[in-house]
Image 1 (cartoon, rainbow, N blue to C red):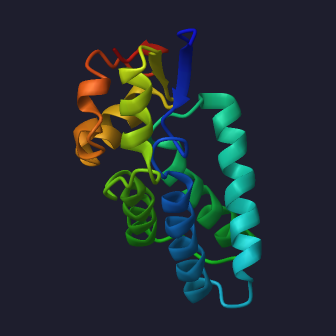
Image 2 (tube, helix red, strand yellow):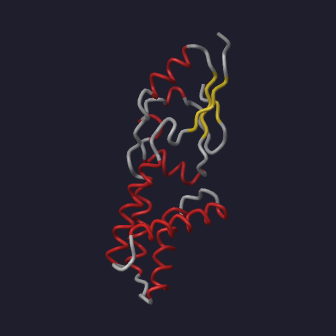
Image 3 (cartoon, rainbow, N blue to C red):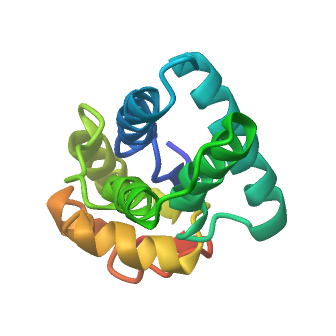
Length: 167
């Protein structure tokens, strides 16, 4: 068999990622209905996504971007509804948004077996993640690094966010 160079994306290819963002967004939208009871959960989610996408286009995947999309959505609805902005509420929203980087990582089923088999077959494996360094440094260590995924030995020279050869 011909040896191949194989590129893996970390997020939602080797480890679950988007499900954690969805969980935190759900908590955010539910909290917003407490403060703005005439607005639907879907409206909060749409506005948060709109603000988040604009920020990604402008700032990339900087670590503060995601929690700030919660604050931006809150500010938007405060302005729209004529409600006074409360520092305690914006602080809470930032804290809530940062929770996504504290959730223990969960590998995709059969990730370890697949990577090990590919390595044993002699393939060159590379890891890529599109996150910026501040998120990576916040995300991976708080998720107990790649060691938690039991693939640390497969990724000894990881450098994020660049494309990295994993062994």
